[in-house]
Amino acid sequence: MIGPNRNAVRLNLLLMAALIVMMILSLAAGKVWVSPLAWLEDDLSGLIIMELRLPRIILGAAIGAALGMAGATMQGYLRNPLADPGVFGVSSSAALGAVSSLYFGYAMTAWLLPTFALAGAAIGMGLLALLAGRSGSLILFTLAGVILSSLAASLTSLMISLAPTPFATTEIVTWLMGALTDRSWDDVKLAVPIIAVGMLFLIATGRSLDALTLGEDAARSMGVNVVRLQWLAVLGVGLTVGASVAAAGIIGFVGLIVPHLVRPFAGHRPSAVLLPSALAGALLIVTADSAVRILPTVSELRLGIAMSLLGAPFFMILLYKMHRELA
Image 1 (tube, helix red, strand yellow):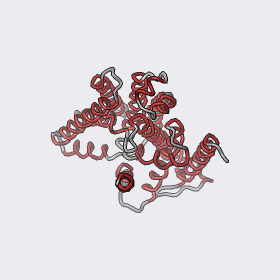
Image 2: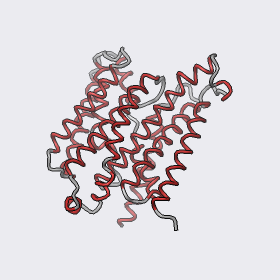
Image 3: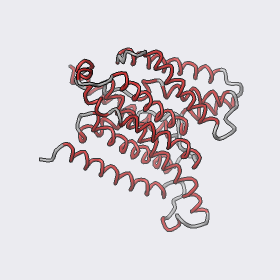
Image 4: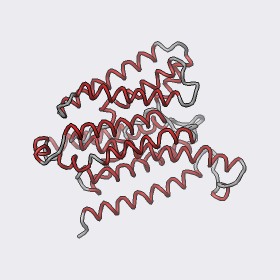
């Protein structure tokens, strides 16, 4: 009988191999298909690969991994299979920061919009910690996240309605849809290091999340510092989601979908789900982004819309299954 650890290793290797294959195939995919023989050429084909598609694929994989691991951490921490990184309010706060840069016309410089988004995420993390207090209570923490998310979403809608020009409104709405279009190496250099640091914080929550499955009181009796765990979760989700939103706008449902897909194969321990969720999230985003580039549409379908079209039915099916189990 194959043990759970061996199963997890096999799953991770399988997902890693699938991700590498998909990233290679994605280099060729698009409105213009580029043969592998032309990838390293000095002509237009080589330029498309090295300056447009390769940074886009690397960024997409990093964002997918970030959102997947953040979702797995959220579901383990809140012990709720419907939890998503958006419940923290960090993604809404990051979006509010980015929208502010567009609203006030500060996004002309390439670095300003991501900087505003990261600043919004940082402010969101600070407010979340302030609202949740030092008790480590899951209920209080969840309510604080819902309040922060609602406030940030309301302020974002206010900025859209009061945008100074129709062009600003269009820019804000388009950016909020989420996409990897026209991303460059500058975006990779900005987002990937921050995502990597955030994922280290999330990985550090693993053992504590396993103990938390027995309940808060049991986890405390086993030596888990619940306040420290809360801070690791806030910092990890804040950095990963904040950097992802800063680089590509809001891309939803990744953190909800992938933990559910990998959990039956990885086991139900939260720590065992973290790495497979990251790999599956990267695979999902790279595959979805390749699909939106291949679709024969006049303008490229926004990745955020594609993920919503995929995630909403998944969410409804999940709710239906939970309803039947409780009935």
